[in-house]
Image (cartoon, rainbow, N blue to C red; front, top):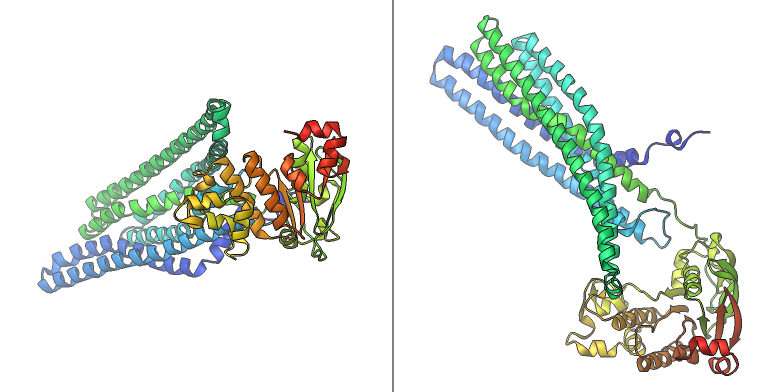
Amino acid sequence: MKSPETARPRPGAAILRTALRRNIGAMIAGTVLMGLYQAAETAFPIALGLIVEHTMQDRSLGSLGVSIGSLAVIITTVSLSWRFGMRVLQKANTTEAHRWRVQVAACGLQPVARDVDLKSGEILTVATEDADQTADIIEVVPLLISSLVAIVVAALALSLADLRLGLLVMAGTVAILSVLAVLSKRIGASTQEQQARVARAGAKVADLIIGLRPLHGFGGNHAAFGAYRKVSTDAKRQAITVARVNGTYAGTALALNAALATAVSLTAGWLAFEGRITIGELVMAVGLAQFIMEPLKMFSEMPKYVMMARASAERMALVLNAPPMTTPGPERPEPGGALEVDGVHHGTLQGVKFTVAAGEFVAVAAYQPRAAADLAAVLAVNVAPRTYGGVVRVGGREIGDLSIEAVREHLLVNPYDGEIFAGTLRTNIDPSGSGREIAEAVEASMLTDVVALHREGLDHVVRDRGANLSGGQRQRLSLARALAADTDVLVLHDPTTAVDAVTEQLIARNVAKLRRGRTTLVLTSSPALLDAADRVLVLDGGVITAEDTHRNLLAGDEAYCLAVAR
């Protein structure tokens, strides 16, 4: 049996090949222009040597004019080829980075979650820094080739003056790259570890911001800050390690390049002193020795950027190649909107079984909050259908046999901690911009006072995570969004825990009225919502232990009365 490493190419390498393949046109154009730039740069000291050689012999104004014209052409070529070459490459680089960012974001936004062992903050780092560094390969390859062109042209020009000078440049270049190749591998490994630690720090601070209010409430903010300080310190130390390795690499490259240039200059001086090359060839050799410092520096830095791009591509592969948590089926539910939970075993659930008929309003009073959360996770398909016992049916079809689009179209589970997005009240209630049921949803969720409070009404700006709204306002806004969706089956998980008793009564009455004729399941301990339901199911010890109306259960079930009476 083949191991995963030998069975298929490394994912990071495949990502880099994809980036190179779909930018081949821009890379060819960029390589030609940057090669022209490097060739023109190389031609400058060659032309200068020829000018010294022939102008000193002719000593005529015509020769001087031709020489000046030649230099002007070379300088113009250098300027224009660099400008347009970098423009082509940077446009391709930026476009490719955008493509990878969109692709990573699309993976995170797919209805079926992927089996990725990364937090949202880490995925954000992958979609930004790693996407940018992966796209750098678009510039690295043309610059690498153009630098090689400059070194080869310089070596050939020096060989025409004296073969030993050309051989010295080629041998020195090979020696420099051999030394730097060892350092570039360490840079790649260090950079990959740094990106991972920075991503963990980002994920930690995202969690910290989300939980800042409750942390302040019970005094846990200092411990949380300490935990963040630890991961941030780890990231800082790794960044220092990467900077140290990069500094060593850059210093070594500069020293070796300077040593090669010095060796070429001294060798040329010795050959001129011996009379084996002319003064013009000496000027050319010294000029080329100084010039090749730049392409040598660029050429020697490219392996480092290749390793950094490879490390970032490997991290992107963690997201892009991750398998889906579940494989949805192709079917669609039958019309009617019935919801059936048949013998579900998951977490604290020990064989939960009940049916909500089409158009019925049912409440589940869970004595253990964890059981309500487990049931909500199963209904929301946050748990793969094949990983728990029992089945859930929507419209008579097992949820595992339905396409995820069909599930989302017919069944909506609104969590108790529904996310609020930066934008406006309107865009939070109606993200798709359909305009359906907005007024009715605002009224039913008792969000009317929030809308009336601001001059902009529904266009009032909402900050990220609803930072400028109270807890009750955020909860009502989330409820309004769920009601405005107007799905066949709606599941609400503790939708009124952050509102006062009077508002809760009004919301319960409004929700029952608005959802009349459509299937609704509410997981709650609110007496108002329990009383508004057609019937109440008692979930205790992971199973349904009782079923009746709220008032009958209050009258005949002491445990129920103690659990829900306020």
